[in-house]
Image (cartoon, rainbow, N blue to C red; front, top):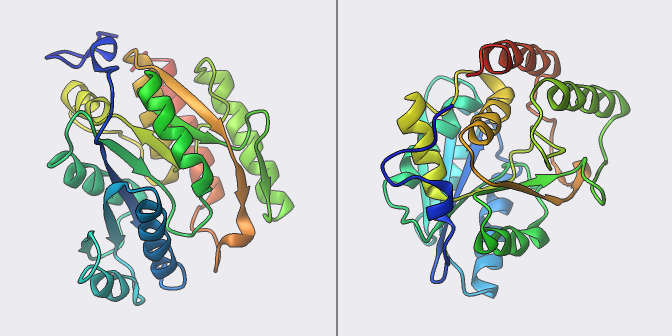
Length: 264
């Protein structure tokens, strides 16, 4: 696998991120019970630490008041709403959010992705930023790393999730990474630009497994990946998880075939 080109060498990209802006990219589908709380918490967290931010919410064809709530919040806060119909899957929401962030993000900025349901641990965001300053290109919140765990989730989802994660670690090994499917991540902008330049897209996969393929592509291109332990608090979510477990596992199988066996 060739290294990133046109100045996108991981070694060159590891530089100081002082005076950064954080671009939050959040996919949302029928999250009217959670999205307002997420916007308010994002603003409160960044203000308390004097962090500049832009919150980009990609509303993936919601049929509730998600877009309406975000639109109202955007009148007073640095929030950008991307909305479209019909629902096309989280892979579409992430791709549109990434493109919107990359239009403005400088190399000293950071792109952070997270769930819309409030399960992300805000306390580790400052650790994300510190790891980026230390030279990591991508940092992942990991509930399967030592010190991490999953709480407040039904037992069968825990079993299926752990099984799917074990499968990916066997067939798509990434040294030092224990959780592949977490949405909660921090990226240097050039990592996403390099993926887009090299492959022509961020991923081929649809559904929640798209983030697994993206992570593996970043690994194959030689970027420095790290993780931070996180306790996933499923009880913080209002409503049900949007992840379709068996669709996601099938996605893992397709990725293993496409990426591991064909070296793509």
